Length: 430
Image 1 (cartoon, helix red, strand yellow):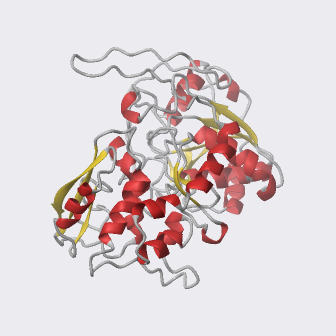
Image 2 (cartoon, rainbow, N blue to C red; image 1 turned 30 degrees about the vertical axis):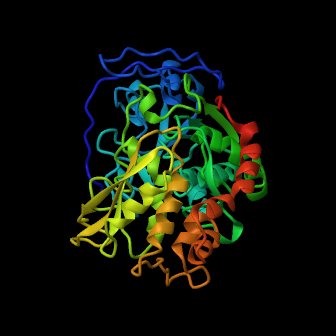
Image 3 (cartoon, rainbow, N blue to C red; image 1 turned 135 degrees about the vertical axis):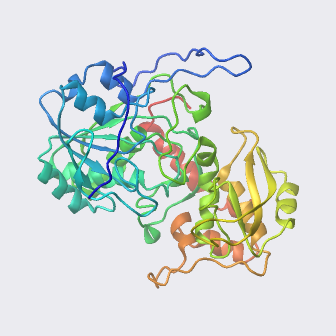
């Protein structure tokens, strides 16, 4: 049986408008000594302000998790249900579950939501065929997607979006994305996924830090991938944000932060994640799971203080590496003292997280204890780092002694091509 959850609160005002037009950003009031926050309205805010009218007469299936909230932390599903204006046919929970009670690689199962009495379907790891089955079981006409992304290719909610869109296209359903800002901005970084290395952490050809909102990604998927995979594009509508531009990070706006997964606790975690998540592909080094600063604390039993010294000597823009020691409570090296670094972003706009992650790998490779993670369940593609980065290139270059500039330079052309390809699907100024 699913866990029971309670949410407190009355209904707050939000807003809906049509299309993707942007309102001029004006500074919000700020406490003395703090920079003013830019007011931003999400797709949810705009849909609710319009009293859900775009969903009139539809049986609606909602794909969401705890991040689908307004600025007063009221959840999309709870707002819809309390309004009495939306016929919610079912809710679909991704990894970690609809209410967010499951750890990485887990779900809440299928059951009845305690607050609303709605059926919540377990959609974690659902194939496209499974999505079609779920839609048919719930008898939905329109699918609504509202999940906060973290901005990296290997953050799995964007592939939940992709598979759900493909299934909706095949079933002839309408698909509505309630957009939210990309918390790490609109700039793309890193290597391209290649067809031979696709997996659940990267199903299609986008770069490692895609620099797009989920609404923009949905438009990109719909134009670039769905016609070939689904036989047609889906009937897509994106309820765009107002007030967001691609240079804004999560801390620049007045929107609340809700951790989108248990190991993504803060916006600072999201900033470093496109780079430090690559340490999931290293067996000898913890990426900080099991600590209070996952992906910001990185280290292992075989490292020492020289790692931070060498990293700081590189003079990478926008980042400093604090010598750090930690003992994870679970995952790699549980209950074992690790030496390493805390990644401290000093200038968000100068910081390239993928370049920083490459530098960390290059310098860590010098230690005798260094070992890539080998996946015995996938003998044809045995290295997890290859699935994370999209090909064997990064691993083989680092093993051969390539420096940071050489590794990063190897994907310059494909990154430029991706930036050109995505331009027509963007909704917000860059």
